[in-house]
Image 1 (cartoon, rainbow, N blue to C red):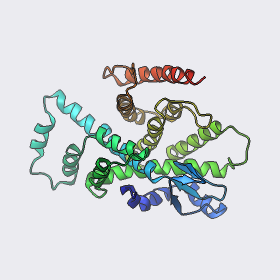
Image 2: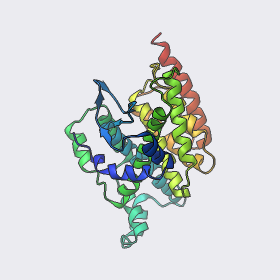
Image 3: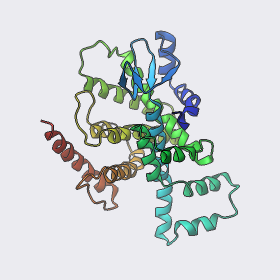
Image 4: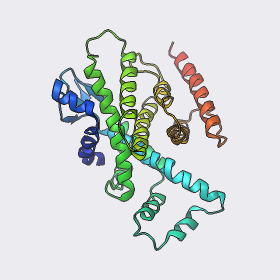
Length: 311
């Protein structure tokens, strides 16, 4: 199946060009410039991978899921905060849209209107999950057809998406540059190193504040995807635990980036727990610092409980 995200490859290439390390790898070591979209390599399923020759492979269904998480992330970090403030003074969504009526031609107001009228983010996230797991029903196809990649709202989603895929590609670049195909490190340690390299490369790049926020949110969206692929957080001896991967990068953030991502993490993990019927997920209090602390404690206990069943 051809996913809507396949029209965004040029944007991802443009995003990668912002990083000197990529140019250096291409020029000095022969990194392949073309990314091959495929679901399998040598008969096994793959999200993303790089071989010893510098050829990158990435799954279109995985990419589509990242776009859908990016959609959810934009609404959570943007619209939710707007409506939270308006609700404090007694203004609901319909009242706010009515107030904006007649000002649609203003680009900023037009964006807010399109964002508030967008499809519910939890529905879009679920559609992305079915793409990831190859459950392509007619309902999923219909929802994908509704994803306009060119609207004002979607262009901002596209920016988060391309930032997320850039994180993935920087991760794969590190595997290649470090020669992870041959050295004796454990697979889990290699994955941790590659995550750290990709995220630090982003944090150290010369971005504006808004660009940095986009790249951080995009990276966090990628790390969310692993929770949906392995909802039991079952250890497979190849990858770090999903919560360890997410919080290893989150803990590198400083204010205000940490505050921007805190509510995002809470809301996505709340939806994850709801979708997979995960028992005893913490009740949210609305105090982000406390809620995230409780969720992290819960995940530590949850993965120990789940993995004890496999011993």
